[in-house]
Image (cartoon, rainbow, N blue to C red; front, side, top):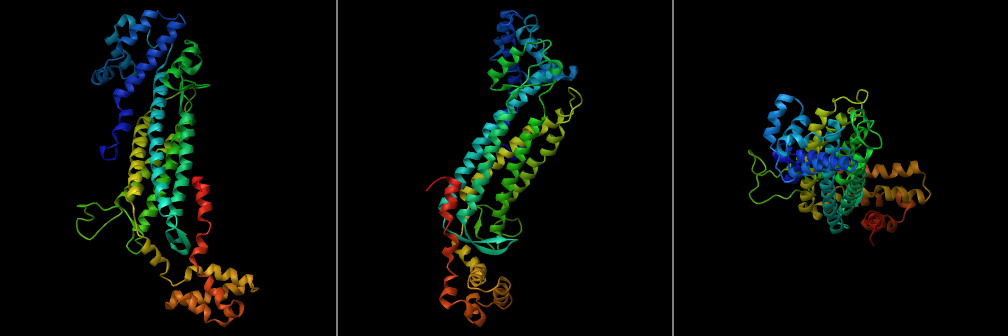
Length: 435
């Protein structure tokens, strides 16, 4: 991923230096297990660990790979140069390249998951704080982009909190599913290596043994993992899109923090654009871009081919790095989002009480008017507001059919905004589990 959308901690997981360090640890732990089983000399296993403080020479490994055309062999050749060719002859005993590659890849995905989990927790904290802050801040709810009924800004934040909390649960499950390793040898039969080696290596690397592998770990695990990241990306876009709508000039109920010295347009000095939200919408597309290739990686020929390899070398780093950056950016955006309660109230009242139409409709039906007649009575008065700029309550009070069914005091009561917020506490308890 390009540096512009990257954060150092996640990038480090996917660096060649980290990858080769994980490969080394897998091989060294395997040698320990082999020595314990009496397959290789104890001294040879100990010799492998003499390289534990060595910085592997990435350029040298690349140089060897240019000749061998095989990355694992290139690494093993370099390791032999460090610990000695005689001792290195027992390294990789009974193993195949995928034992190293797949186990390493899952270690990297687990480590990436831990960062993403922390990212989600930070975002949840920001969403919760803003939800509590604006629990009772009235705003108009919209369906199809059109005024519907009153809600609160706190409920908007709470809705996004609940969605991201579900994503946290999904990601934890995806992490658990991807946290497997395989040291099962060619085609996965353990013919040339004892299953105890796999158990030892996995325990040391923080994984569980894959119940059954071929020459690779089954890719349905990875498909589920990247699908989870795709869902998180979509949730990011969901929040970003709401913020973009709120910042539209005609709405302006909230806007991204505009820092001192910031410029919104090279041509129009007045502009303050929702650039972070728009950027997040684009980054979400990149995250979702990995989902279909990951799904297609599930299908491999017989016990193994490498059609999945080139895909994963890209989507592993690119998707986790992008999502990490996007989550951090969204957290900052939510944390500093500027809210305009007065504008929210003004927007709600723009059509002079029209948003209370359902309360009047229900009251008429409760008073004995058929639903069809009640709907017609309310709608004809509502259309005067739409088309002539009238006041909805005034029109209802002047309609003899309406007042014949409802006393004026009861019509007045139907315009109490508090009616729409009476269950906010209940919803908050459901979302946050607090009083």
